[in-house]
Image (cartoon, rainbow over all chains, first blue to last red; front, side, top):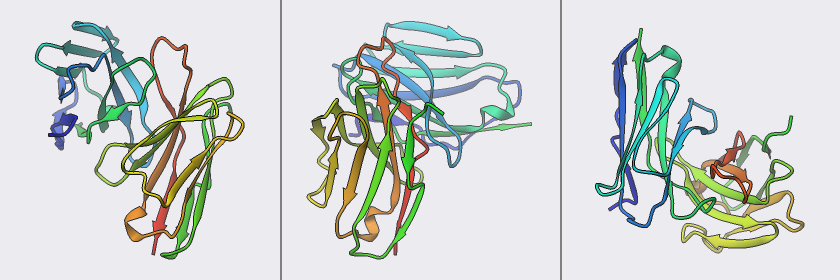
Length: 111
Length: 115
């Protein structure tokens, strides 16, 4: 079992719709959860982080964490073509320790 | 530019040759990480430093790989006797230990092609 699993996609969503990206993790000791966005040929950049159960909103992005189910998700509202990228879920056991990444979900927003 | 910089950006080498990559982190960041990423995969952890101390090495890091951060500033990753399976993007990232976000700041990567 991989430590961090994501549905690899590709995921296609019409412009203006909600994109939903999912991630599960195996280590119950995981404490910090991150979503990174990676455009093709570029390096990952942080979108959001979440530590506590529940929802965290930042603009069009909402991260959801359920530690009991070992599940974290990212919702992108009002999807834009510029959101087309690979989204990487990452977890860590302690603040600022190594991040363990999933394989990423490739998202395409269709105009 | 005060971001993470990596050099070279691209390296093509023949199997069996040695290669070295350099990473200059954000100046005040005390943690430095090396990851490897192949097409269609997420970054895989290789090793990380806190200041000059190498705190963890992945099992992925065979004896042919060595990383250093001699003065707690820049870091080098050397691959000896390269193999075709070493072809990948090598990403360096840095972070601040005291950060409350745990965010890693990535460089643009060094792409290695082994022929």
